Length: 126
Image 1 (cartoon, one colour):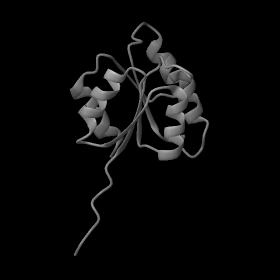
Image 2 (cartoon, rainbow, N blue to C red):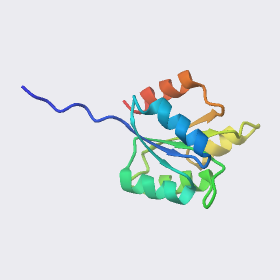
Image 3 (cartoon, rainbow, N blue to C red):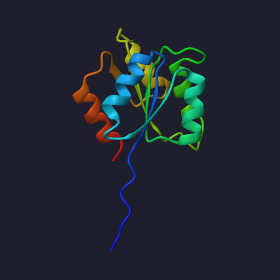
């Protein structure tokens, strides 16, 4: 009896700093299928075309900021249920709430805590 292997979770990383993108991809590549985008507009295209299970979203992005990306994902029925995690250096009072109000499900600050990231991916991609 042969069965199909379960599909690996899909994680989209939308991050403008190449070193951060590379780090996240390396951390997650054994746990998930990972694709990256370097700006908000390219990130939206990736989400709409690929339909990831989880989006790791920097909030300070060129072209279209992360808050706008989150709002557009939530406003698009085909991807509105995608889990969005703000992964950002924005750690001031009110930043978490602002990210949640824009449509993010979670808010993690940089530098990323690997254990927290892995737990989040496992929880979000069941």
